[in-house]
Length: 67
Image 1 (cartoon, rainbow, N blue to C red):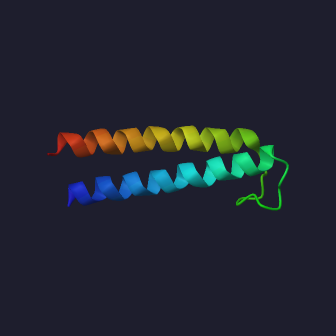
Image 2 (cartoon, rainbow, N blue to C red):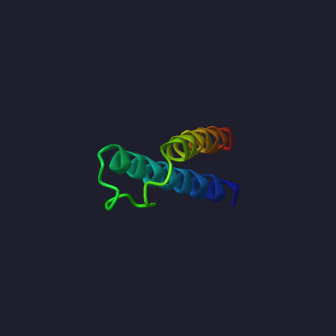
């Protein structure tokens, strides 16, 4: 069960990172109509993308320790 939770957390963090990176890229390109989250704040997008990467790293390292 703990391995499944680590993998679920890894998948969720990858989705979060991709969502916020896509939103930041669309807002930087000037295509706010294509921005997934509306392109509200570039700082918020970058912060959540970085925190998603941290969560992905923590999930992966915890998964490796459980083998």
